[in-house]
Amino acid sequence: MRLVFVHLLFLTILGCSVKEKKVNDRDYSVLTKINGEEFKLESYEGNVIILNIWATWCKPCIAEFESLEKAKMKFKNKKVKIFAVSNEDISLIKDFVKKRKFNLEFIKLHGDLSYFNAYSLPTTLVYDKSGIETFRLTGGVDFNTNNFINKIIEIEKL
Image (cartoon, rainbow, N blue to C red):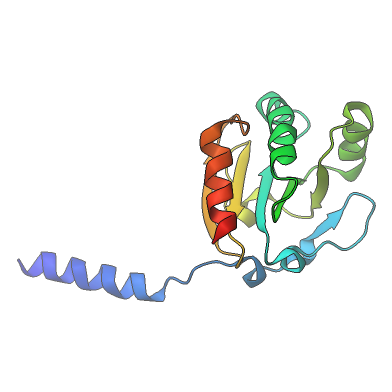
């Protein structure tokens, strides 16, 4: 019984010290547009933000882009912003974008993927309009499903 109490006390203390991570709690100076311009996610507060973390060599990542573009069209009149984030060399990202011509905004991460607590590709993070991470998806996803679209629209209405 005493061990259970100590364990619960530890979890309570630990739980109290954990703070929700918001978009503007991070140092986003490590992000730039692929043209080198500064990119600050906090300037998109008031929008649902979908961050798709990918790499040029990742086939499931590339396969997601087509459905991500279709989903983007469904959010056209909504406060939803979609960004594709890679930490690869900027020349690789630019070459990929030039050859593939996806209609997404590509962002360079100057650091490793652990910056977003991402340890597999692809990983997609969804932030609500106040900048709080609402959920994340790992592995290949079809973003054009009714389930995903409706979930994002529901978050956007809040």
